[in-house]
Length: 406
Ligand SMILES: [Mg+2]
Image (cartoon, rainbow, N blue to C red; front, side, top):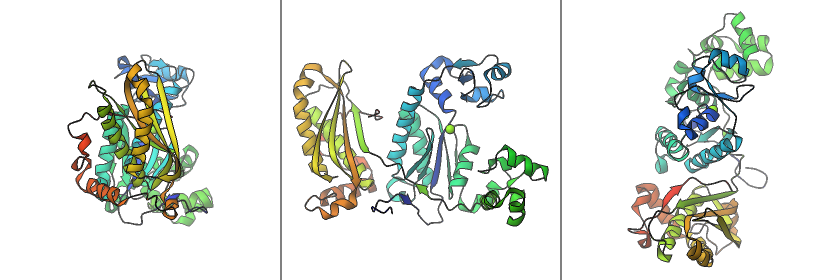
């Protein structure tokens, strides 16, 4: 807990392998291959003077990151060099983190294409860590169009090693009983903190595998590498890594949006879409133990212009009926424009988020009314399709879309 009472760190002390390390494969090159089908299956190098990222086809020829452009061209003369498109990568990164955030409230971003996720405690809601990892990889593929590798283990260190070993487009689960059998045969370069210089020092003493390090007393490593690195590397060689997944990155909003199909956009049809969005977003709010004050309705029109309408409450809430009531008001206010310009996408975002602990003092604004609680429990147990509102029966709810950047 932070001084102001926020939960910023989270550790399930169980014997289970519940930490996922998810890492996109050759991220920038994969975005280029996604967006230009003529690049698929070919060696692609992002960066002109220096290699920022090489596709797996180029890596197979020896091309590496940070290599000079001329050396890369010599190794792989048929490579296609592409100038980086940072905005495309940023957008893809946001969409991938959206999938992470949909998977668990406990996400620790490491870089634009990499994160730790703790899925402990989600078994009843979402399945085993392995099932969650399978779904995560499928969702990133279908919602963002990119391959991602996932390692699952009891420690962050081992999860990261497992995702690296599983690449490309892989999944590797290391059960607690198999940890050292998996880790010890690996080359020492797999250990976090062993860079080229340290590796050279160790190789000079005949130390090549993680098992060689594990067999050494800690003192000997400390004498060789210094106190900090020696202890650190000794601990990792025994898979001792107590660092929890830190969810320092606070989400500022939770939202969802739907592209509308070709069905007529009558007022009842739009209301059904809105009800579906409110159900989904408020359920995610409650699952993340968050409440929000600002309800934002986002619309996209036939000519691709956009509009946002919002309303800010005095008190934060995650209550479905309160948020639905406000969202309906915002939609009603937008109906003249919708009638004139047509609507192709409806989004709902709750912003100004807070942790739900703050509301307990603010009765009668229940953050999770009794009905919402029962609905959440039924959906947790039997799936989201188990219960639906009468207004949604037989209705086209639209196609769920990855959220666009704010
Ligand atoms: Mg990566």
